[in-house]
Amino acid sequence: MKAYLPYLFILTCVGGLHGQYREISTGTQYAQQTYFKLSDFESTTIPNESWDIVFTAFGLQDGGIHVNESAPLSTDNAPPAIEFYKAPSNDFSDLIEETNIGARLFNTEESWTYGALNNSRDPNNPIDYGWGIYNPGINQVIGNEVFVIKQRDGSLKKFIVDSLVLTTYYLRHADLDGANEVSATVDKADFSDSGLAYFSFTSNSTVDVIPAEWDLVYCRYNVPLDDQQGGYIDYDVTGLLSHPNIKVARVEGIPVVDVSQETSFEFQDRIDVIGSDWKGFSFTSGWFLEDSLSFIVKMPDNQLYKLAFIDFEGSSTGTATFEQTDLGLLSSNRNLAPPGASWAIYPNPITQQTFTLSLDLENKLESVEVSIFNTLGQRLWTRSLSTQEGLNAYEFQIPDTITSGQYWIRLQSPEGQFTQTLFVR
Image (cartoon, rainbow, N blue to C red):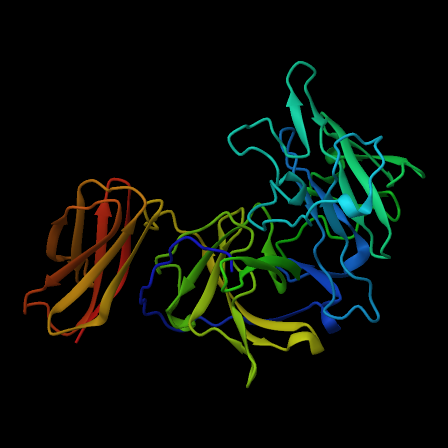
């Protein structure tokens, strides 16, 4: 499955936060996609085949192109997903033989900035978009890659984005032998509200299939799975991807009811933080949900929502149910963790006055201090730490004067700080 940034395993005691139960669905056999908002839960459900590719529309410099990977589990009564491949030649006028096309292309689901058609880009070259190269002399991205499309009816087409001029994409597609060539344009300026311009090869035009405002999309998409033999297999999953303006934190190992704004968590920009692995499948008992797993969604206005999944019905209905809790606006006093850092304290509650602190760092931190405070904010115990890049582990003995009860433990450095609830038995 996709790799996530380190999470923080923390215990925070709060009470009384209850949310609303929400249902989302991809329909029977996962034949649909659902876009929805968290603020009022307005949703739009559309068939998978409503669009084929999507062009990013966030500004003048972006050029992401994603493939619609949504496809039903069974194609008996619904068309399969559209498929894209690398063509054997980058000259659109060349005849393409079906037997010579390259490997199928997939989105990474890391961001909306780069999709399947950006896969060949050089990440160290900021003017390389994969499908084309920016020419500063004429202020245009010039297409330099040809792709092969396997349409939902099984027919094959070749496709190229000739250029991106200011806000407008110019593209062409034709049969593999060049017959039936058609062209189209996509103006990003027309889709600034949603940030995404959806295009259908069937209509050869952009389509208004999703609302201008949406937060999450519940759909089918592809992920690489470890085949346990040193390789990967491409596997379709059902999960949630987030709008590019939204950030999400994954909170694992804490009872959902105990997760609040006071819990330490780290927001991520990836669009697949919620993803699909909030559920699992057992061949003996069927679908099950992961325990003590919740997600904190931060809206552009700093509004926070906690999402926790409570049911998934599988392909029979494609319906998932989650509890949505309003956590209010992100506090300006919230202590954010240093970037690339996570910690854990165990045991918690502390027994026999000893505990271990585990600190995982991408970069060494300077002047680190760990302290314990009582609920009145009085510092009761403190130690200075020396850190190094990677995993750091420390064992501590606290004085007997710190008796049974609830406390705060804080890890402080110039780069940021963690704070969590600590219990002593």
